[in-house]
Image (cartoon, rainbow over all chains, first blue to last red; front, top):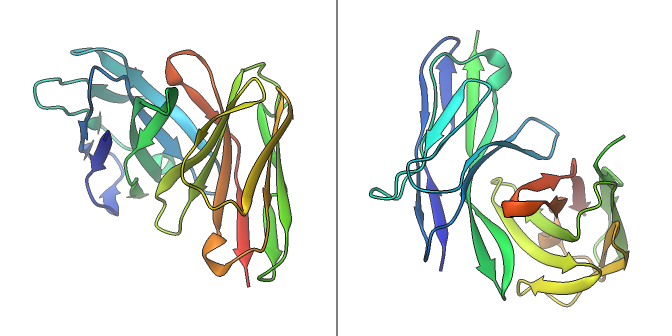
Amino acid sequence: GDSVTQMEGPVTLSEEAFLTINCTYTATGYPSLFWYVQYPGEGLQLLLKATKADDKGSNKGFEATYRKETTSFHLEKGSVQVSDSAVYFCALSGKLQGAQKLVFGQGTRLTINP
Amino acid sequence: DTAVSQTPKYLVTQMGNDKSIKCEQNLGHDTMYWYKQDSKKFLKIMFSYNNKELIINETVPNRFSPKSPDKAHLNLHINSLELGDSAVYFCATRLAKNIQYFGAGTRLSVL
């Protein structure tokens, strides 16, 4: 079945450091790919998405490129801030019992120190 | 106005009790979901409804019964609560291309 694998956390960085969170996927067909972010005590929010190969999703300084050849969708940010501290989830769209659903990775907790 | 609202935010109860979690959305989306997030943050789909009709039931024990009285509501009733049911439960709705909007979650603690 479809699956998503993210790098193990937690990840701790200093402010203004470069961030990469790796994400690879296994899927039949050509899913859409997503990054969701969960701030403490809140629900998940869509951060960015890409719907086809070579698409780049971007939002709030974060970027991720849909790489079909390596089945990856790594999240990057050039200079992180304390406010970026959260749990980040990579996800793909798939089908279950004929209905659309999201398949999530296990989440990566990111902590940014001032 | 909160787009997807869940009540209660926190729920502490004894083993064996029956409890409900309510979810309401004002986005007009047709599809709604319930997810369970365990203590390690792993997020797993439980149910999905489309226009009040159950379309996904992901091998959840039948102690869990979702109910959708109308398109804007998807409630989750849990009978005979067990320790392993302790988790954060999220309601979500779906827009096109599988973009989902999540509620803030209900933290359930079974003692």
